[in-house]
Length: 333
Ligand code: TYM
Image 1 (cartoon, rainbow, N blue to C red):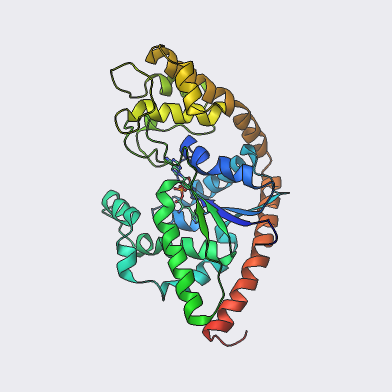
Image 2: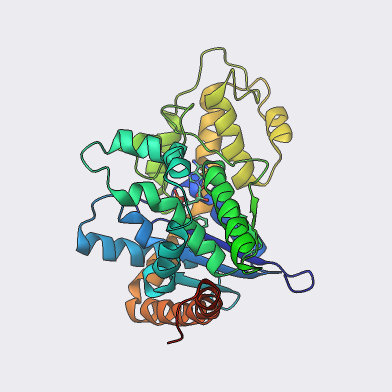
């Protein structure tokens, strides 16, 4: 940390599409943080290899995610924006940290258990060691703060443990990062199963909304969002997960607090409320979709920005690796 400026790091996997869950839980906060801090945000494409990818579609999706970063308002003049596989130090540090991470602590990760259940035909070693790669991402840049949604909390705890373990053994090397999990919107849930997380890879298209979705599709999805049948609009995630989720989404896109939204919709029916949420989301996302189309149309510029971002990230990552290699006893290269 330099003065009051923090080093911030976060990333997203290029699987499925960037959902409003990713936007509210993570990307929206990144945009706010980039003005006063030193930020790095990456497209974590190495993480996405834990599920089978079609090479051409994978490359295209990575570029599309980069264009969506820009369209959301992540600014390459303010933040370092890059693609993880363009900076080889990530996997280099991962190996070193893997040799300090215990199988028992990886085996315990909720996401490993979840993903193993969902990918029974492909429980690869990467699924198990994935949190170590995530730790490497963060520690490589000596980040102070990591803005993420609630589902990443356990991975952040492992990152902190690995940083402390390394520092204790080899001397002060890594910054022990703090997670930043927003008080509201850290777990946006599925529009169809409101007790489950809204997930990029949900095969049910009605359950998720992408940030570049056309207006009509957005309105339709909110219209058929699953709620309950007592027809009262209150924030109570335990008893009313569907309505509470819609209130969180409305609040994130309108800028109004949940309390003010509850008052605004007091006595109105669910139909009116769902329509209002859909319209608020569609209005807020329309300019993002428009900018996305413009960025995507200029592939050369996207390639230039990716290259530029990777060079900036590499400069920081290489410094850290030099220090790490010297500390652990690698001979100089
Ligand atoms: P990923 O790609 O699943 O999600 C990207 C970010 O979005 C958040 N998020 C949500 N927030 C609220 N509600 C939801 N329904 C929701 N779904 C996802 C996630 O918490 C995350 O912040 N392993 C990470 C990517 C990663 C990373 C990193 C993050 C790789 N390296 C280093 C931080 C630092 C992942 O799979 O996120």
